[in-house]
Length: 391
Image 1 (spheres, one colour):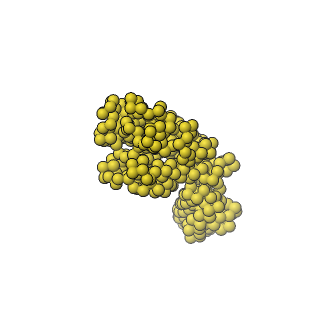
Image 2 (cartoon, rainbow, N blue to C red):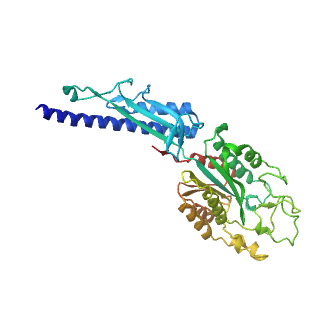
């Protein structure tokens, strides 16, 4: 009978300790995940700590609410995705590690056993740990700078909203001087051709120069993400190479801020291809790679198709989205998500449908016919960053 009771006690209390262990692990997982969400959104370790502690208290281990003490801890530090290690003394904090313990050193003590006391064993130890970390973000923005941003009534400049949206993303990533390590941004501009305007680089090192450049509203011939381009050769009717340019408006034309008379179209497919190439060139398989496509028209004119004269002028009428969809599919195959922001000033369903079809992966579609909404739309995208429990 003693032997039978011993095996029964062992089976019951092993199950009891397994239950306690699972509850401790659930508490650690939930607290680490919740704390990281706050760290991501608020960028404040104090708030993240408070939320993680609160979530721990909502969980129980064999009936007792979890409390933070010398054994149950919440620690911030750096997670290395390559070595899969957590360093509480790292120079950067991209992770939170939560340990939950019930042992002789904890406030609540070890877990009391049910039947083993009959055989002289009163308690058992439980310990669980979870680490939640933010993967580095690599984001390439593809910005349409075609002439359609210009209100042809001449009263409103819509491109200011697009520029402000870039600053909104940059400010979010900068985080008042404490950007998350590994976060990189880049900027592509496109019309009939796509060009890398700002090569992919770390926010931590490029913030000041990018902000100064993207915030420049002057039509300066030397710098600035300009409303119109003053880098063209002086305009004259015989100049026929506008389809090779990536600039939205020819400032040198006799009428101030007039549209390019040989409009090169909008090659969205080329923009996605170039953005994906830039992301893939980094070779970081652990980073979350995203393209943010900002467009105001769904035309997909391919610069290689543009001929001379009239063929170029009719490009906007040749709306073919096949190249853009193919480029989006290729990017998705490389685990790149695509977000689409549409400034649909004419509220045309054809624009909406064609652009919506280009979202991939985690990406989503957002649209407004008011350019002042673009910064808030960009902020929503910035917040939409997945979180991974990495251990």
